[in-house]
Length: 388
Image 1 (cartoon, rainbow, N blue to C red):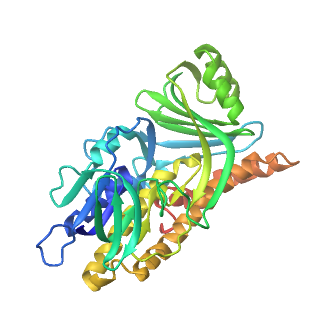
Image 2 (cartoon, rainbow, N blue to C red; image 1 turned 30 degrees about the vertical axis):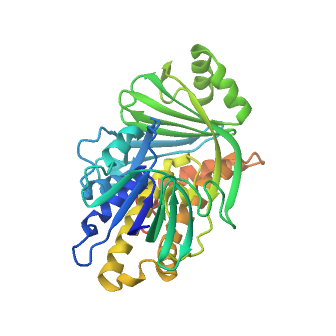
Image 3 (tube, one colour; image 1 turned 90 degrees about the vertical axis):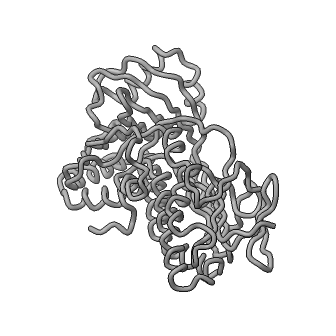
């Protein structure tokens, strides 16, 4: 079996950002350099608009991946609830930055972060099927061959162990919701403002994307199926009724797609030579757009951990202590974002007496107390470790 120091299973942005971050350490015959293999499936990425936080933009900038990526900036985020008082507006000016985040094409992000032009990173069109410990590290069984590695990084949305199986101890929650996704035109245009409007059935998000809005409409599966089957005019009428007039008048809608929503958080027990990041580690509800951004922070911090190990104790790279230390370092950020996104869905789904009043008071508090609003929005941009 061909040996590598690190094998990255996953060709999406999370796995590719990790590969880019490891590239300065990679290359055979360079003293303490690492040999790195990235394995990715050959299928074309499905396109959709996706939000990158300001923190994710900084990661891409540091790796030289931001320049030339078409991106629509978000200058304001308006958060409100349907049928109740209270709202808050988060602005880039709150933080002295040009944008809170950006909306990009997922397919263009995949293409921009692709590692085919990195000579220090070996890349193969293949798929991880299974893995098992071996005397020399981890034997990773790919669709075409097996390779040996000191550290296997699972970043492809698969589960550690066998294909798509969940790891023992995984937390799984079916939200009993589906997201209907499409692009919509409004009058007036978006003005680089994003909206998160909570309804009893789930949040409705509008993200500025080029000259349109990207819509993520969360609702019960039966209603999502009904929305998918509507004529465009009826869909626009229903959206206007649900969202209201704050974003203007909805004029046209593009092709729609829908997918079920669930929470899956894998058990982070340390296995020697195994680390999971991104959707392979946690799959979140799309509220507040945190899933990919959390995964990119996973990748960045794993590259930093590999750098420290290479400088201090290279032999620790494939050890249980290394995996345990990385899981411990990521635990605070991971748990905060999991609890925050899950808690938002729970809090805004409550239909108890006074629950709308309590939610409205919380939104009004954020709107009238700038330090609290800035504290929350920094967590969303940079994760739990962001400085105040």
